[in-house]
Image 1: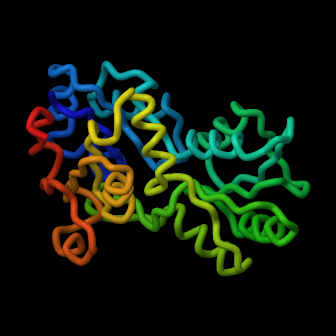
Image 2 (image 1 turned 90 degrees about the horizontal axis):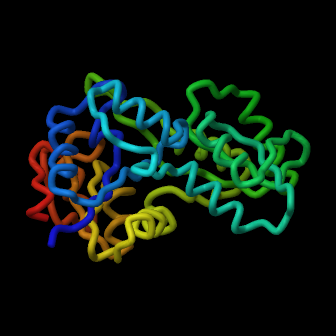
Image 3 (image 1 turned 60 degrees about the vertical axis):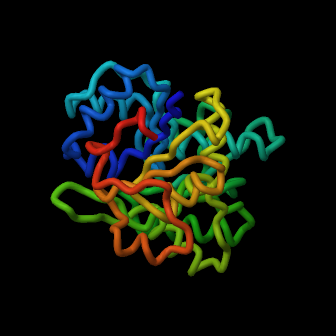
Length: 259
């Protein structure tokens, strides 16, 4: 019996706005074989609807919003479980995907002594937002990050700064470390296996980052597959004290039935 597939997106399925060659065919192989799968992404900017529409725009159709779990969803679920307040508040450095998930679980967005400062990647962040985040944390707000990624792969083989760079700046200014909910936190992995209805050993985590996807899958008890189409290279992989079960150039080379 083949394993269920849990796959990252950035650097695995696409780079920025560019589909990785073979990704469409890989997803079709999953569908044709009836393999249970979902996408588990540290991207907190976009909603599952946004991600589904993005894939449709890249020529991958037939998916539903249930095929996606984002770090924004995981962060909102975690924060809801941690507060007993009827109307908890958060100051957000991040996009609509994160704000929408917080609204869904009963949070309001506030700039008046918020309970939490929640930081994600943002294409439009300002220095003023960073200053406010620092001030609120100094006033006692709890410091939360959606994910630790320092860079994200983009089209053309390049990279751009990600959530980890903002978290590092705020940590340096406040002396407070954020609690990070996204991969490699096992909370994300548990959400994925529960949604698929499988035990960790019945799933394969496919990702392009040794320090989030692979270690997260390993620590959760999953089989792991590294693809070299994103952040980690074969050379950088070999420097880690842990190794993936499989290494592929890209998902184009993966036969889900053989994992």
